[in-house]
Image 1: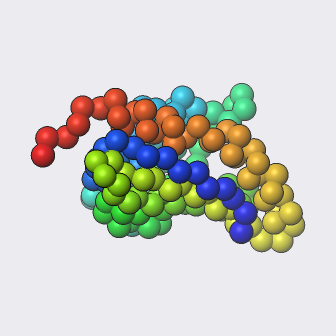
Image 2 (image 1 turned 180 degrees about the horizontal axis):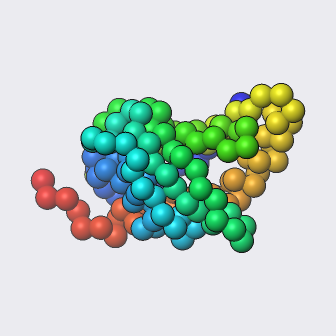
Length: 149
């Protein structure tokens, strides 16, 4: 497995952070390269929920189906997608910290056969493209009015 890990502190509760990261449709609000995200499955969001996301990669649009692979309210979300024989899974792990939340974000890349040799290069490209993801997430969540308690 190859990938990378980043972390950030968000000045909101785990519940507020989880509400955003567990719904891929929210990404269109804070990530410029995400153009559309549509929920494909019925019912509430949870493990197994599927979304179709369209993003700009380089100069062209690319569409992928995202699956909520892990779902533990206010604690953990794992979102997986497969493209060209490479599986990408983003894990968001949340931990309360004072009045805020620590977010550990891990990108895991997996492939079989010859594609495995490409993983270090793919990880480098993805980190370059997604390296500001947590900072944009943090700014977006913190810009929203704090939930009433």
